[in-house]
Image (cartoon, rainbow, N blue to C red; front, top):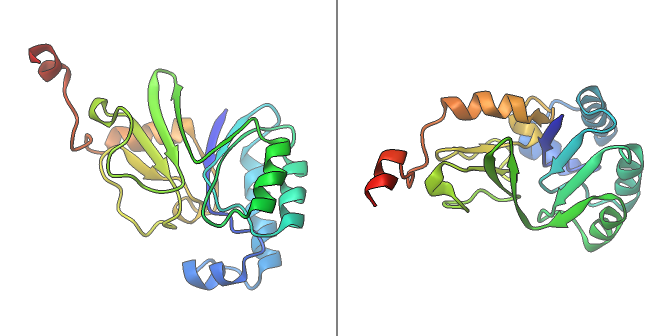
Length: 182
């Protein structure tokens, strides 16, 4: 299975208030977010984390050690410190600030931030992002995969296919009919 997630902000006290997360404290938040990830993602799966895992080096070590049997691709967010990035480099299959992938023929651009246009957006490629904690309206084939927008769980590629099929085309989409005429 292939999974996407972002914006855990493990051990970040202020995120509870900022996002309205239903937790009493960071210990409960960290425990629930990690439990929710464990419920979905199993050894051998692929996980794309689109940034803002944690400020905390100890929490980063704990997280990556716990999920070392998962193929993790890490997209760096604005709350990922250089120490956390250094730790992630030891565990992750790839690390970058932006990444273009293709799954089952679907082109997808991954970035911590939402974009106005992205690689192959004119062919209805998807853009997955975090950072906005479910507070930013997507445009076209774009979706916030962060935990705050997905009931505190990661989201699978299959779930995204259903969501994307219901979304409008990208504003710059060139249909097959128009491509033939060009």
